[in-house]
Amino acid sequence: MKENLAFMLLALEHSSLALPQCRPNPPVGCVIVHRGKVVSKGFTQYPGHHHAEIDALSKLTVPISECDIFVTLEPCSFHGRTPSCAQTLAEIKPQHVYIAIEDPHPRNRGAGLNILKNAGVSYTLGIGRKEVRDFLSSYLHTS
Image (tube, rainbow, N blue to C red; front, side, top):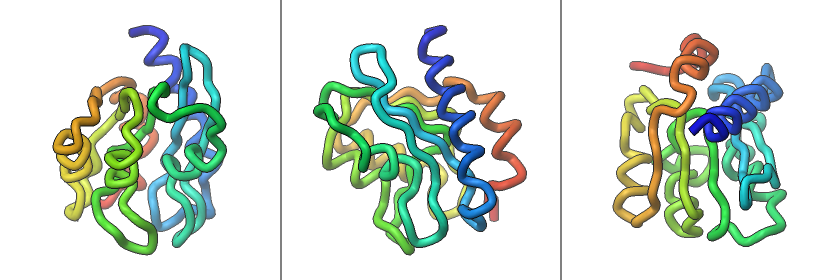
């Protein structure tokens, strides 16, 4: 569990690289771990380009089915300027997804988690919740 928190805090640290280019999207970080070792990192790019998960996946050189994904915010469930990250993860089936906090955006609010669940992708919600919420709270859309 301590190792999982360390990976999430690394994703959180990486999320700050998204600022200010990612705005109005929230600065999200993602770390992909293969057999206990970080193999890829990503963060939200400027609007219309990769979200953190897809940025990290684009650099991945090992099979995703053997990897755990640590992402600071629930993967998006809807297709906006970019495809749904939750749908992408549902299709490629990582070993496990760790998510710090649920996205309070009205178009998400658990919908990304439902996509993962319905596709049989296991996930854990809440690792690093306080640290991530403290950082992200001013960037999140709640209405």
